Length: 275
Image (spheres, rainbow, N blue to C red):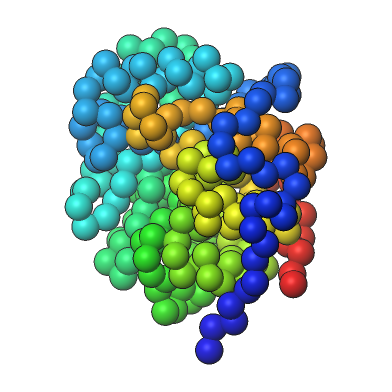
């Protein structure tokens, strides 16, 4: 039987406001990396034109982001053609210039079919040529043998990065499972805008709960457009600083994602606080 975890309300969490947050002036002296974005045009539910794709990159640069990983979906709705996507990435880089630097990854929906594809051709879906792989769950379910899935990926030498667990309705009732997966070696990426309340109260509570337990390794934008799901990291980073301190907050958008892009072990990975 699942163990349901009693969570506080936002009113009981220090620094919670449920809306936009002021910038705390955490000016970065190093590069800021966004390892999860849907910035390539006309390939999934991201931008529908080159103009919007370019505008998203410009918006990211204005927010201080210097490197974006384009991570198109790979699921039942959107096919993932790596060579074609690399061509699009190269075209987008030419259009935006030197900054932001763009690289290619994948937002891999965790299904039996996709797992088999990864086992056959692991680096078709990873971030660049690294061993880091973004793994996405449905917002409404969790695979029964997900622990075994993570083990099989680990046996291949891959490090799974679980994306936006705060939006999954099952994990919202039992976020303790995320801590267990972190203990198993899985890394966790939370959407920056979840910390500012864009996705509603429950995802914000879960994001803050995970952060308070040192169970988040990256903040990313999961940007899709220039109107709502925008390529902005600074607001979420500032909230993270209020909750967990400046050093941790900066590591989530600087040192840790930079290490992922370089294919190196992440430098900031405290042991999660288990309840």
